[in-house]
Length: 523
Image (cartoon, rainbow, N blue to C red):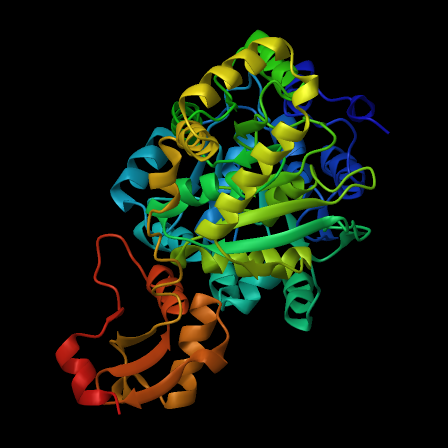
């Protein structure tokens, strides 16, 4: 089956093929015609990585016409997914002048209010912020025609299901509901029965979300260290031939320019490139005139190049589906490949989501050591020497060799040539990256909730773990007082918790404990 069989408009078809989609996935094949027929409600049991966003995004774009009110509301469990879904649908609208806007906590609410006042056709958002706008009367969903619950089971796990029900009660009575969930717990089934009545049920077949021949690794880094770590990974690989994924066009340009300045054979590729520029870059990469391609996810759509040794997630993808697409470009045709993901302390939540939804076994790796990098560079020189007979103009090199050996000792010549070949890179190799210097530390956190808020130790631990999406077993040394509490967690989980409780424009209820507090309360 192909997308033409859905009788989509030329504009939407053009956008689909521009993104590199060729054939619909199983869930798209089932959901798209059901939505286009306008028959009723739909429940789709579908894991991330099966193309579910496009399955409801494509028909929404096809069915909706620009108006001055909200016609579709899409609820997602996290701000990252809200952004991802909004971007994905926007990329599918082609020339259609629909306004798609993400609404989530952490962004200025006044900025959101201004955009909503101007008129938005499709709102994508998190339950908390959507409910906030409804209560402020800055978001009217009384005319919503399509109500989409994306990753419903995840919203249940994060404690948002009551908010979801309150939002549904504010939406129009004749709305069509689409519920997507990887699993079907009883609470989700009861929600469906209460609000959906009759519905069509689609169960997507389990796509293989991992690549058997791809070794999947994550490396703990700090944002400021990413570029140096990337260079070490490239230098420590005997024959590096890979894709480096960045989140933004600006980051692609920055990384590619820095690599080229250091003498690497690299090219950039992102959405600002014309078709001619894109083809020129890909031709150079396919013919291995360059061995490093830095790209965004959208620009890399449709790229099918065999023999890649590596896929590097320089920026961790915000959606597990993108992770699957990225790493699927290596480990092909019976050849092994390596997928390396750089993870900063604030990004462990995204890593956990990728592991959970893709069933991927991603093992921890280490930053290549100085010795490994130097050894790899030396091996490359040895290999080049062993293939010296294949070098053109070999007579010229022999003449130069004789001249050098007539003036200097063999040791002096080799040392001088090594210094010349490795010039500029030795100081970079020996930079102290201080790897893992904080990842294993413990952090004491202050929580502005205590006994007066109805908390006991068990409730506090559950409150923190569910909101942040972390394992409750790593929360230790809980001390509960009337108006506040303290907990101790590992450094990386502390960063996740702080990020999860961050609210723009308001003081968070979670913060790092002050030194005085630590000395007073930690045993």
